[in-house]
Amino acid sequence: SPSFFLGHALNIGTLSPYRLTALTPQKAEALPSFSGGLLVWNNAGGGGAALQKRIQDYVRGGGGLVIALADSALAPDFNRTFGSWIPVKMEDSVVRARSGAGSRSGPDYALLTDIKLDHPIFRPFSEPHSGSFASAKIFKHVRLAVGAGAEVLARFDNGEVALAAATLDKGRILVFASSADDSAND
Image 1 (cartoon, rainbow, N blue to C red):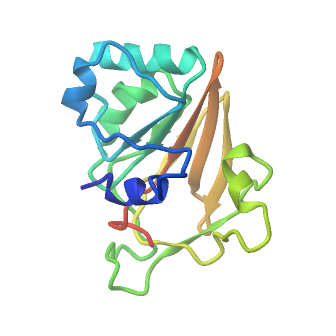
Image 2: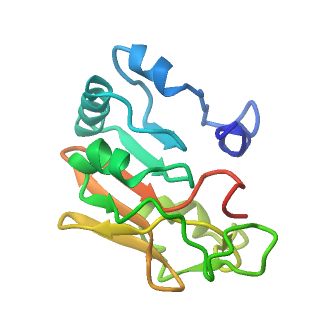
Image 3: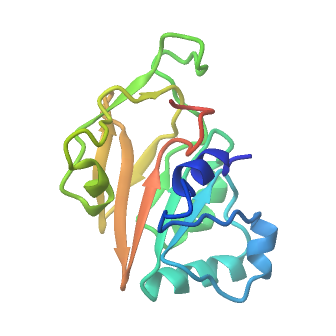
């Protein structure tokens, strides 16, 4: 399941302040609204117009949205749905690997560089011994184009955008150019 790693990362115990509830896009379509402080859209299409409107209203009202784009993400779908109101677009649906290998078994991968560690998303990693992105290997990613109103928070070592951020009224949006599971990165 695409939420397996997120679930284990966020639901780390009874004392954790985080709870991840996994929904399919079809179940999300049936919800009248979203609750909580953060919506993680992982490895799924954008849904219909009504769902996109509810997500947009949720973000405008102060909610957070993180979009992780796995290899199944299609540029036309993303650009028609999320890209219609977020200043980040997918350039194409081709998943990139350094030399096109595109598998975890090969030596080809990209590294994260130019990380803006002062951004709030990286705050948990600002303390000593709290982790580093220096050795994270990204085996597959999509190409993103960042428009006016968006900021690049991290790049891949080939210069392509790895993580982009934008604000929409009271809410914040992050778009990650790879998956939030281990299918395309470690």
